[in-house]
Each structure stands twice: as structure tokens, then as C-alpha cells.
Length: 81
Image (tube, rainbow, N blue to C red; front, top):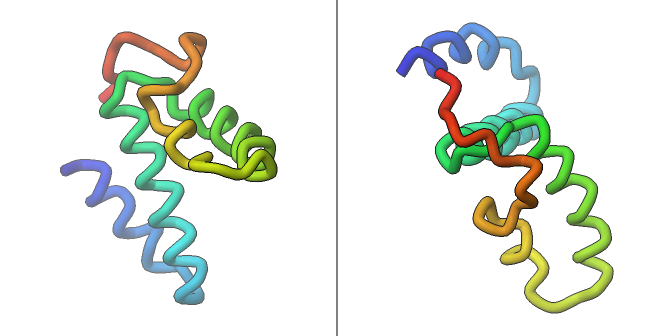
């Protein structure tokens, strides 16, 4: 609950609808990484790097970017809250 209270002040300054949507997407990725025992920075780096490569290969590339398929280097084995 605390992250939402802290984020509320930051979301106040989302100047555009697109900016607010982008913030929500990134926030969702970070919280998903945390809930799956991943380091959020490492997970975001992996997703943003590999998404371009996997998308160019075609097929069902989005499934390959799920937290369960993240490399073992992104695993923290403890939730930081």
C-alpha cells in the first residue's frame, strides 16, 4: 500500500495522458519483478534489451519475456519491501 501513497505525489505531475500511461507500464513491470523475486533493475534491463531481438525473430516473443523466463542473474530470492 505504501508504494501507491508515495507514487500519488509523483503521478500528480504526469503532464500528459501518454506520460501517465508510460509511468503506469513501468511501475507495473517493476512491481511484477518484485513479486516474482527478481531484481527490478536487472529485469527491466533484460526486458528492454531482449525485446528488440526477440521481436525481430517473430513468433510469440512476448511469452519469452515473462518473469519466469528471466535469467538466473536477475533472481534476488528475497522481496525488498
